[in-house]
Structures are given as C-alpha cells and as structure tokens.
Length: 539
Image (cartoon, rainbow, N blue to C red; front, side):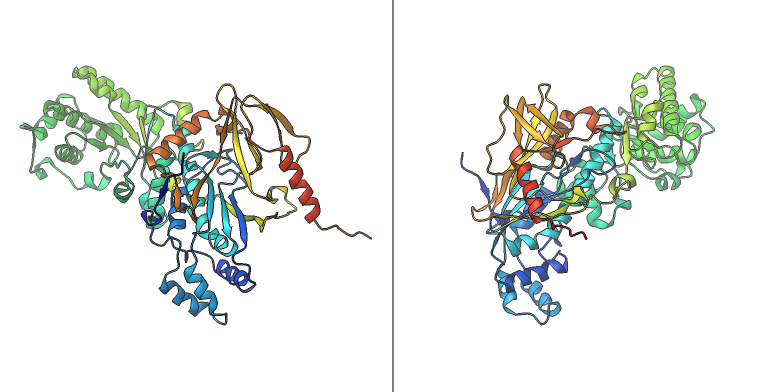
C-alpha cells in the first residue's frame, strides 16, 4: 500500500517559540564549522534515546513525537532570525548565512517509535537521517520536545498505576506549573499518560481535552448568610428554604451558615454539576452536613448532586467518615443515591508511599483524585536525560566510548523489535542492524546483553512487533501516515501498560526490562569498541 503524505504546512507546533532558533549556540557554531569544512551535506545518522528510566522505575512512556514532526515540517530560519544571527556570529564567512536561510528538512528522514509506546533505555526513540549540519541543528529542539513530554507522560502513567484503573484522575496543576508552556505541556502529556481531565481551560480549547472544575475556598468565604442569595429557585423550587429545612430536620444546625449559603448559591448556578469543596471550616462538623442539606434540597428540585471534594486532612480517615455519613443520611431520608455520590481528594497528592500507595494500604473511599504540584512539576525527578548521538556518518559507523559502560553508544543504523510471550506480555526488546531481516514469531532468536557476553537468552516469541517506522520523509513529500490524535495516543498508552509485566511496573523494586542486541550487532559493537579504544601504555 503506498504511503500517505500530509503537506508540511498543515502541521504547526502549539508553541510559536518552537523554531530552529530554539537551540543552543554551539549547534550553530558546529554547523558553521561543518559548512566551512565542506561537510555540511554529508549524510549522517543520529539516535535520540535515554539511558535510565525515571522515578526509580523500569519503564518510560514516549511523548512528544507529534511536536517533533511539526517542528521538522516547518524547519526554516526566518529573515529576522538570520539578521539576529549575523549580529551574534561575527567574524565568520557571510556565505554561511546564505546557506542557513535555505536550510530545511527536505533531505531528512525520521524513523520513530509510535508516540505513547512504553519504551526502555538505549532503544532509539528517533533515528534522524540527513545532511550532517541540518541533523545537528535538530538536536536541541528535538531533545526539548521529547524530554519533558516523556517524563510527564511517564509520571502520569505512574499515578494511574498507583490510583488504580477504577479511579478518576484530574490534573489540577496549572497554577503550580513552570510557566504557561509548562502548564499546557503538563496538561497535554498528563492526559496522554492516563489522566481523565484537566482544569486547564487553554488545554481544553487547543488540545480538545475534557475540562473539569468546581470552586475554591474563596467562594465559600464570600458568603456569610443566606440573605446574600438573590436567585433562590431551581425549576420552581426554593432551594435555599429547602436546604435550611433539611439542616434543621437532620440536626445540622451547628454547621457554618455562610458555608450553607455558598453551597446553595453554587447548586443554584450549577444544578446538574453540584460538587462542593467541604473543608473550608470543618469537613465533618460543617462541610458534609451542609452539603447533605443542599443535596436533598436540590433533589427535591429534580437534580442529583455530584459529590464533594476533600482538600486537607487525613484523606483515608475523612473519606471513610464522609462515606459513612452519606450512607446514614441516605437511609434516614430514603435516598439511596446519596450513599454513592463522588468523593474527590486533592490534598498535595503524590505517587509514592506517602499518599497514593499509603491510601491503598489503609483503605479509603475516594473515587477521584485531583493532582497538581507533584504531577506537573515532576517533583520526584525534574528531568529525563535524553541524549542525541551521532551513530553513522557517510556510511561509517561511529560510537562514543566512556569509562561508564552505560554511556557507551551502540553504533550504526539500527531498528528494534518487541518480542511477546505466549500470554501476550512483553518479553524483551531486540535491537539489530536496520538492514537485517526481522525476527519471526515462532522461530528462536539469540538475544544478547549489550555488554555482558555470557548474559543471553534464546527467545521464541509468539508475536513480534516492529518498533520503528518511517514518520517523516522530506524528499518524499512530508509526513508518512496521519499522526494519531491525543485520544488515540492515550489509548495506546493504556494498552501498552496493560501488556507490561506486573514485576516491571510495580512501584517497589521493579524488575529491569531486558533490552538485547542481535548476535551480529553485539559482535559489531564490541569489534568497533576494540578498534576505537586507545591502547594504554604502561611502563
């Protein structure tokens, strides 16, 4: 089937700052040095990958590919970019700027793993093939567009694992995010990683994300009595009078009257979406009694309350007490629906044992978690650490050596395959030369540890999935195949997480996932390593 191409001008980065000028100065100085030496157009291959999974875990969610392709499709220096660079790159041959203003990605190919795929160290997320200088200029922007998105999507996926598939997760982090773009990116990749909605209205508009929100403590504090409510009725029923009636009848008369008024006002404004923040004064002595009174009044008007939000205190204890109070009131007034209204928790929640895992151990009645700071800032680990390495130039494989084996790069053009076991779980990822025939399901293949010759396994996979596909072909016309929507990427993440072994994705002491080399690539790596490593002289 012939490839389907999308016009390059149909794609655009969400952030207008994503241009070729969003780079480090040394990328431009290297490009100039390549150009001056007559090497700018030499064919080169770069790999973008990471060396270690984040958050002390053993998996990563790949995010950011869509923005990478959008950048590549529009990669072009403007006249004002060139004018600026002439002012900061003084004393160089002005012919470089004539070359630079014509530089684009029309000769570049990009092979990539599908966005939203669960990925592991050393496997290239992107393989960039093209003219040396242009491919070099792509390094910084591509790293910027992959590092935080992948970190953010991984963080979200870990919150989803900790909370459980049956809980709803809301991203509430815009006010704590690192600037406007940090907030928008966090909302985007939190949704990809498994969150259900965001409070970020800009993300809703530009990304099509579900948005969610209730009210803050200020709304409750703004009321001191029911006399401040001018519009009292919903569908002909005086909700305020009914709420005051239920407050007396149920013995809730010591609750804060201003809070009752605030709840009435909000319920009247949003009768089909009444969800109240109940901890402004006292959750159990005031917030919940007032909510119940207003919820019954709203029910008399033909509408069901949605639930409550807890934003402080011992969430495990409070959620169980709140649920019990709902159950008691539901029986007392013969309204069984009240026992099942939603309880939302949003008190500085993190993924590690101090909150989500601790709640699970203690038992709780929370249905939905609203998570902000720890999610959007990736507080547990602020950076992923992707790198961009030259692995081939003019057909000659290149590698970087290091005293630390983990920093030794695997040379040459490579592709990877995911091998699945008979039960459908992922066994390992196998990396091999791009031109080698792929492994086949049902046929044994020897898979070797990249650096330990005796660590190997003969694997017979029930299914083999190619990880890399051509996603950009500049000479061929642009983007190959339509890029998936954000909702399709999210579904892909969920599917990948479901097939990942439990021991790999557990929070405590997870099992490292195997990334192996083919026999031929293993031999090639170590042969080149021996050739490139200098011989030490001893005397």
